[in-house]
Length: 278
Image (cartoon, rainbow, N blue to C red; front, side):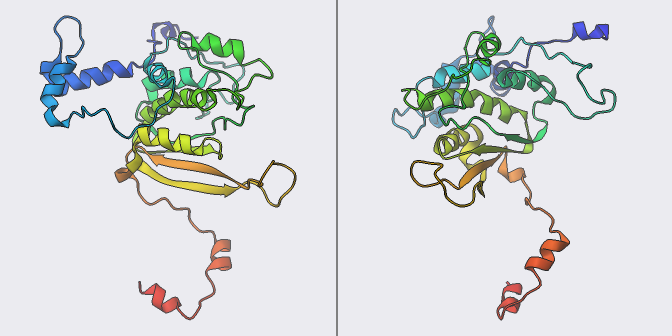
């Protein structure tokens, strides 16, 4: 392996420190001399009436949200190490496959891919009561992942008082870090089912901004009935789509195939000419 590898800065990008420096660049007077921190009271004075001091406001919260936010802000000291022996077409491939705790990987990717990813698609646990395997440790998530990922039978049972809270605390830091990877014209698509659809929409509105919501794709996953569920048979799942900045997004289209044109666009009804002029 190239000896230069040992000289690479392996700690993930410190996004909090970067934001603090950006604030100092905008408002130099808020910098506290000596310790590198910022004077929040002075920042409030500078912002004047733009600071919301009200106690009652629309917000979405749950037990553990503060720790989830901290988890997204804590830099990782884990290491990405190439595995040439297990790779395919090592010298020519343009693909990258990373195996590990996705929270730590998202942090490590910030250094090389921050603000550069055009599209992210994720298929997180749906929190169905048996697919949510592990909880993050806010002290050592890498070791926590290694210890718990192999345990069979562990789940986030719907009888738990933290059933939704645990899932939200797992998702929140990952979505925040995913947003940091997106380019200004980037989009993120997230698969989900009925169990956490509403919760996912709430945290996406907070992290990505409700004006940047593009649409919810509803796709049919099952045909017909059957004794598969206790009440009505669920036939669809969802994909939520958000933009990093919706003003940067162009039309999202898929070119029609000749087969589609022949199937759907060869017949004209009596109002065709009228619609064509609209």
